[in-house]
Amino acid sequence: MVYGPFMELEDLTSLFEKAHFIRAFEGALAAAADAGEVPGLVHLSNGAEILELAVASALDPKKDQVTGSHRSHGIALSLGVDPQALACEILGREGGLSRGLGGTQHLIAPESGFLGSNGIVGGQVPLALGAALSAKTLETGGIAVSYFGDGAANQGAVMESLNLAVVLKLPILFVCENNGFGQSTASSYSAGGTSLLGRARAFGLAADHVDGTDPVESAKTAERLVSWVRTSGSPAFLEASVPRLSGHYHGDEEKYRAADSQAADPLQRLEAMILNRDVPSGLVEDMKHRAHERACAVIDKAIAAPDVSDTALDAYIKEAQS
Ligand SMILES: Cc1ncc(C[n+]2csc(CCOP(=O)(O)OP(=O)(O)O)c2C)c(N)n1
Ligand SMILES: [Mg+2]
Picture 1 (cartoon, rainbow, N blue to C red):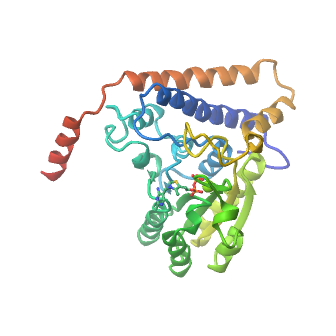
Picture 2 (cartoon, rainbow, N blue to C red; picture 1 turned 180 degrees about the vertical axis):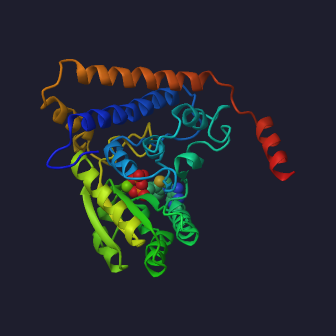
């Protein structure tokens, strides 16, 4: 990627295509959920696509390892996880990353550097710490990245991880996606001290904040922190402000926030940046259309794949135990 006061048009359009694919993938997933095709809740990543793609572009999938929360579809796609296998996994279908047996809360794709999503709020953070310890011990040159939310920042295991990362000098980047909410509770209500940077610095971490809706700043900050963690072997903390454009889960009535409190969509900001350049008419709409078509084809194929039955689960357990 090329930085400077702005990104090259090529970088902006590439980011736009990837971000819109993630958005369209989750849009098609939400429609599949409405049709009763998705087991469990669907937690959408919309609003965080730009930030997650910025972090992913600074990583080396061959040696870096990333863990995410219950809201990990965008993280997985940003890392280059096969969308078809991801969709089948989320829908509980054969062909999924883990044969459709894990579902959205247990996604894993080590070949893409994705160590997994986690349904236990904050549970993914100590796991990334283990990946960082392993990278350091084995001298792989890799780093670990752990995404978690502002709600998870209040979880004990997360604070222990922040402390231990400094004490053991581990190559890990903590990425706290601050969307202002933990489920239906505003962070301003649930946290005594709302300065996440202050908290991270109190543990001895190098810490920075970024507006996760700004493509240029997100790319520059992610690149700088990832490279600092890699070269120094020390941990760092990135607080990224991102909007949660939907409710906590798809279908959430969101009675706890005003309808007009909706934040601006980062993808529209990126679109405006592209349209400000001298681009052929129709370029942006074509890219959106292609992303939509591709995403719908992936989700349709997953819907058509055979369901993972209890029998398959029994067979898997027997195989694992033998
Ligand atoms: C240990 C634990 N406590 C509570 C929950 C229920 N829960 C699921 S998501 C969530 C909110 C998490 O908020 P945040 O970390 O800010 O992530 P966001 O949903 O905003 O991305 C809660 C409380 C859980 N899954 N695990
Ligand atoms: Mg949150």
